Length: 202
Image (cartoon, rainbow, N blue to C red; front, side, top):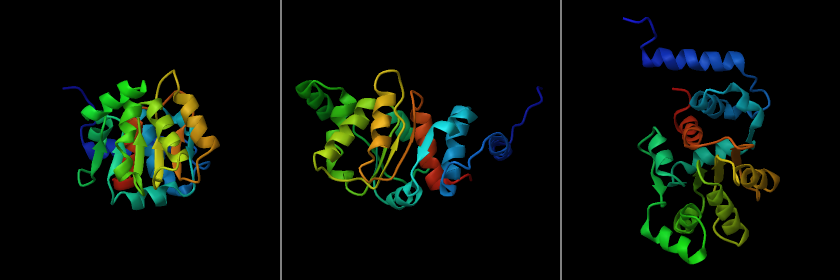
């Protein structure tokens, strides 16, 4: 048999110890350590710490909002959240999202944001895939729509990902937020952010 570490708890403990040893987290709010470590663990890249942007009030606001439904833009993200006691809503596959997208000539991800409206006030928004979902959310807020408790924004890709996150950082609309600059992101990192809020490093 090959010699490798098999114990899940020991693997987690060693992984988090390596991340702490290789990463300077001093530029982030101290309350954000668990979510930063989990995000680094999810992607295997310690260098993302320089691109993480987490507002001082994000962890407190987002943690408080866990008692309400969490709104997400991707089914993969919904399934990546460990704590199954949390209520997670993804409207991407709601037939109405497709109809709205066709009618308004936008992506299904952006269209699905319209279906968040009844749950949006005081909720945690977690975007891990589509830049158009983040743009649509910000447009809804700008138009006077319900205000979420916090935004965790990790859209990924080459078209609109960096720009949508830049817009959030430049103008957070007085909302607590967590994001990563540039093209990087994705559902694994977004789920890791929520897992850090709900589970810490346990």
